Length: 67
Image (cartoon, rainbow, N blue to C red; front, side, top):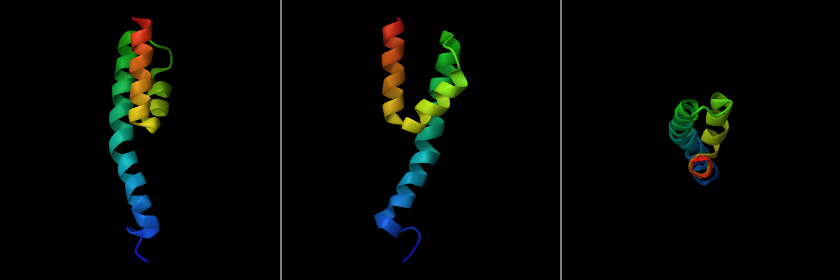
């Protein structure tokens, strides 16, 4: 069994998710939170970045509620 096809490619999908969505969403949330003056922008970026698209939606909802 190859490592790339193990568990029907689950390891590849999770790896790509962590390499693409986490840094992209995390950096956006961090920079936007810092610009808006939210508390703990680094923690927000890491946590919401791990959630990916769902984290982005949570951040946008929070921003909309504050405005």
